[in-house]
Length: 267
Image 1 (tube, rainbow, N blue to C red):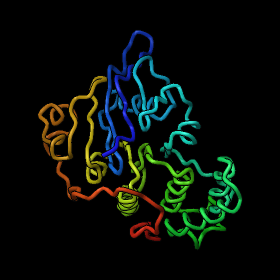
Image 2: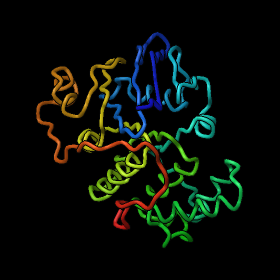
Image 3: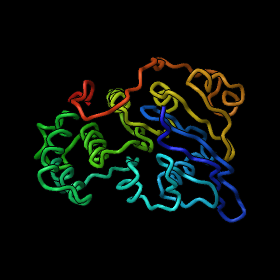
Image 4: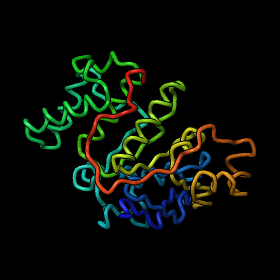
């Protein structure tokens, strides 16, 4: 199985304080990986160094065996195949759903004919064709989130980094986003996700890394990390259980855009 993202030995200091101390992790093709940890553990800083928002003091970030450590975010998206979904709303509120997608494609230099076809594909995939002319400011939380994920796919990414996708939304919307993320994985797109909603994250991840005091405390499948003694002591607690444990899946050898089975209009 090919490795899409390889992060090795990340270090970040703020003054005399070392907040990240040699963090390493990887994500393979068609895999959902979680980056978890308590507040102040260095998880968010590690995530931001991975996507290019923060410059590391040491270490490397590789996409498909290419060192992108010094690449800015936009180049990682355009040339490295990395998509990023911020926790905060990132849509252009005064533009329509359709214009949000087409505008992003124009910024990437995609020709007009391809833009139109690609836009129609994404609208269909995320079941937002019926609101294509609606202003983004009028969308519900679930509709806006689907539009944001659709915009991530404009650049045809090999991996998408999801920053707190479950924060501040209701359980029904969370369930819909989980299904969308699973569907992206089934298309062969890799996912790196960080979120404080531990149960919701572990329900969809194939593997997770738990960060504590700037270092990787443990990693493994959901059952392995939940039952790790130190992870339970310092992070999960003794009461955590998964209501919907992830099921094994077959990772595809290729990917392509297809209508989503799960991105329903209820989201």
